[in-house]
Length: 262
Length: 128
Image (cartoon, rainbow over all chains, first blue to last red; front, side, top):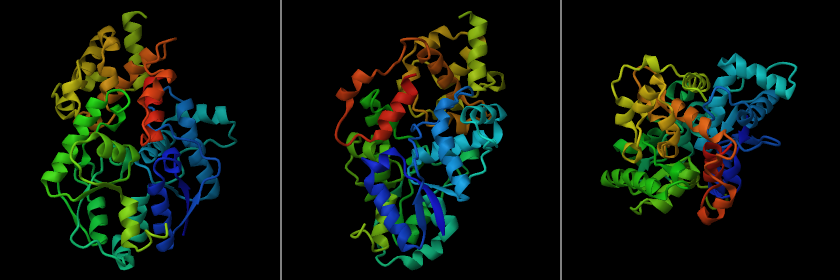
């Protein structure tokens, strides 16, 4: 099946691994990710204010482009996913924003949030199915204790993201199990690592990231996985702890036996 | 801006109704950056409700909120404190010359691994 794909700015630059391992894994699973033409950066943070219009337009353009292609829109980066999904929710529920966007873009027919935005993890769970994914695993990650790190962006706000139970998620644990590895249970898997503070106040980012990593390490983590380039940076560069942090797509590609060719 | 007008403006752009708050303190209890804030999420709610917004516009807490949505998710009354903090932050940076992050400050903050996501996010949060 073919999906529209929104990689986002960081996957073209510092997070190329997140992208290329995803593409190789998708190909191995028979999923076609077709990159949207002319996509623009989502801005990285969802603009919460009711009167923000311009900052939502790049997301709307991507959503509309997927609608025109008649496809679901797949995201890979946690931040892109959060922004696109929340803007899409505005477009489905806030008439004022719908009208202003339609006027600005001179749309014949207003965009009303018709596109379905799905994160690649959701595609693996709901489109492929973790049982099916397990069948494609050629190099099971036996005995590896992996701490799933959700962070804040994939899960919250729970009512809008509808990704999983925001306080007791299972999707990454089930993903880890499907790859033959062992998920580590730890309390801070869905607490913020403080990554957004890294340019404003690195001490804050370091404190928060270290707290998360300490908690994962105390529960036996040999590795942490994430879908967010900023979490990966913060946990790798700012946290004191030394637990290796990888993109979820890298362990996926490894288990599927396509890591080397990616 | 006159006190009442400023309050109305904050309520309008945030879409938040602080009168829904039942003062349980859960938003501040769950805030991962509580220790780094002068005014905590529950204080943003109560001070906006009282129209006491000037101190909030001057506080460093505007820049230490992590926008992680923990307070939004865990509020039993769906008050959404983070949206009030964002509205006050915008009331500050939308003013002429009041950008918190200036492009000339960026080069000193870069390292070779810093993801673009950090830069675009900082601009969106701290600059208009």
